[in-house]
Length: 157
Image 1 (cartoon, one colour):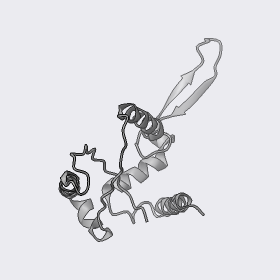
Image 2 (cartoon, one colour; image 1 turned 60 degrees about the vertical axis):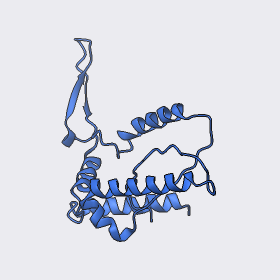
Image 3 (tube, rainbow, N blue to C red; image 1 turned 30 degrees about the vertical axis):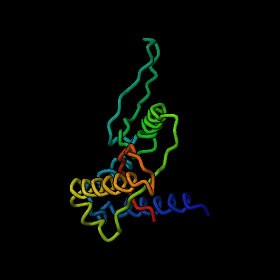
């Protein structure tokens, strides 16, 4: 079984458990809000609007439920995400790129979730310092790299 499929199955199982327990096991308020929005996407909870045929003689009506608009939702955020990726691809220069990942140890997750701005500021500052210092050294690169910081949250285990 592929790693992606395993991650997807874990997500579905966790999501199902959250629905059954009413999200009471989720400690992080942001995560709790995301799960609620995903479960209510395209339901009456989100509200709806009524569509009526423009022909005055026709009585056909159709109700359309509103979406959640959350970026994590495959329905709502998928199109924006794909558009963002296409926009970023158009900005790439015709040169080689190296993808470097700096991670936070799992033991610091609770501290990080409670102090996101400070912890990610520290992570980006330390990462940039490390990359710039090593890249300037002729032994490694002998140049100044361009750095695009990006933060992706989530459990990748």
